[in-house]
Length: 88
Image (tube, rainbow, N blue to C red; front, side, top):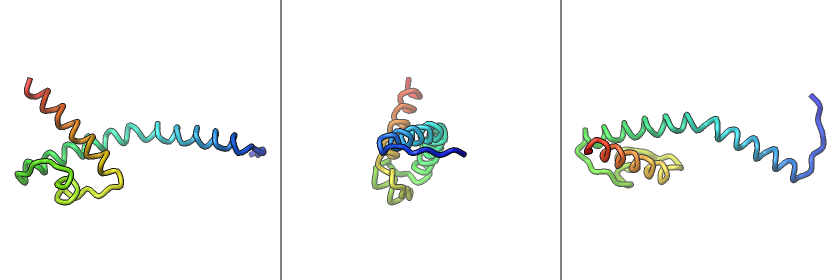
């Protein structure tokens, strides 16, 4: 493999391209994960007779990911939209 010297700016461009490619590849997996989690959380709420809140999601349901705030927002958006569709 041939190597070449890159300027710091060129290195940043290459890193950005690689990062963007990794994010693009990860999006379908993330979508599936969020949809699965939303379904599992909804089922848990119904089984336990609980109302959804951020503290319920984290402390009782047990989601401790570093992305918990964003993930909770995604899940609540999904739950609201599904309720709207079902109640048409």
